[in-house]
Length: 151
Image (cartoon, rainbow, N blue to C red; front, side, top):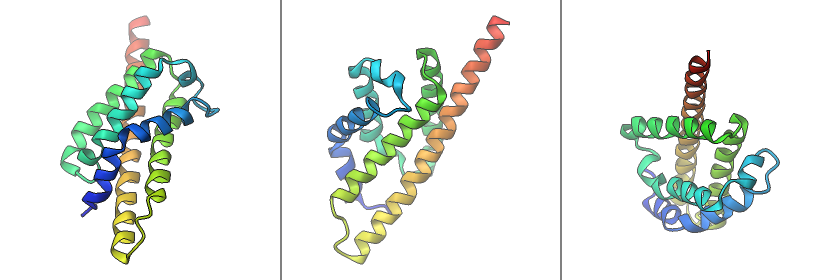
């Protein structure tokens, strides 16, 4: 079972994580469309991910909810003019910011905490792998639909 303490830490620091992510996404060479996108919209989107992470990570029964959310995200990003590689890079930054944050809070006082942190890591990696897959699928489906309308 994933440590509730770790999940609460992430969710209660969603604002801080969001701010860290915004700083990263605004300067990363692979996310240039994000540099000019309205900050309030980016902030809202990143906060939504971090604040709901505990509800989604490690809960297989919510896979359809996660899939639908990220398929919609992919379609939205296409409509907004983002390149697919940028969207994937932004998701990777979301995960990386999270891990730097978790590691910086020293959950390594005992073997149990190390185990719980590794368990969380595994669940988060799986979650973001799915997020990337469903985002790509949503992006591609929306692009196909757009191409069919223009053909």
